[in-house]
Amino acid sequence: MRRWCYQIGIFRVRRVAVPVIIVGNITVGGSGKTPLVAWLAQHLSAQGLRPGIISRGYGGRVSKGPIQVKPGHSPREVGDEPVLLARRSHCPVAVGKDRHAAARFLISTQQCNVIIADDGLQHYSLHRDIEIEMLDGDRRHGNGRCLPAGPLREPRRRAKLVDIHVCNGPPRENEIGMNLRATEAIQLSSDIQRRPLNSFQGQTVHAIAGIGNPRHFFDMLEQQGIRIIEHPFDDHFAYRAVDINFGDDHPVLMTEKDAVKCEKWAGPHHWYVPVEAEPDPALIELLRHRLQDDINGQKAT
Image (cartoon, rainbow, N blue to C red):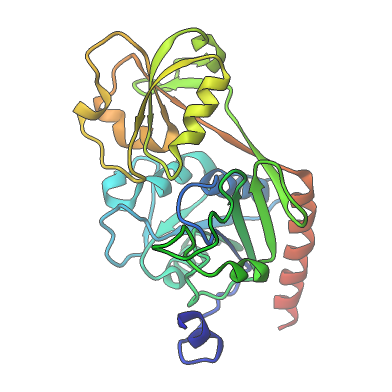
């Protein structure tokens, strides 16, 4: 009903002067969306564009905004994913309840000429030029039912209206595949200290994951031959020192998203494992054509 109100003009859809790419999903839970957003920003920058990333800042204290996120920002203020994206993408990031205002803020202050909206598929007040749905290759759309009976934020037919479907895992027809690659662990207390992830092979470690689907992280470590003691937490969990210290000598491995919230309590045995999105090259070609069409259309307008 809410989406229909935007379609017929009861609610206002607002545009900005540059192309907008929405990356989101119609399911709850993790699907690899944040690594894809970081990859998109880096890829577009390499193509000579100046992308900016906007986010609601879930888990932070931003009531309105917009606020530009710096790498040193507190996740408690602006949210964990925006801080991660500011560090990883090296692109301007802004958070705010009003994503249209956040996009205009980056365009005017940072001269961004393309906007990437992190998790904005249901934020219909912002006009979008390209919609990308992220799918978890294992869970997909679950039982096909909407909350609370299932995992869907919107009916499954909504996915048919999305421009591009990216699957974190083996893709099906009309989907683009994507893998997440992890090769090293980085010490929280010193980014200088790094070691190959497979160097933990055969060891017992504490594995911390406060993400949408902790199983993904645990499985990735086990595939490296690492023996893990699992510590799953809720997505966007607000950590305390007691949550990451276990009173033994085992190394502690966590996701990069968790690491931005745990740095102040970290010792030399705390490590985080960054992941890199590796989408099929078909996504690059598809984006190039779609963005060029959108830029040309806006110039004509």
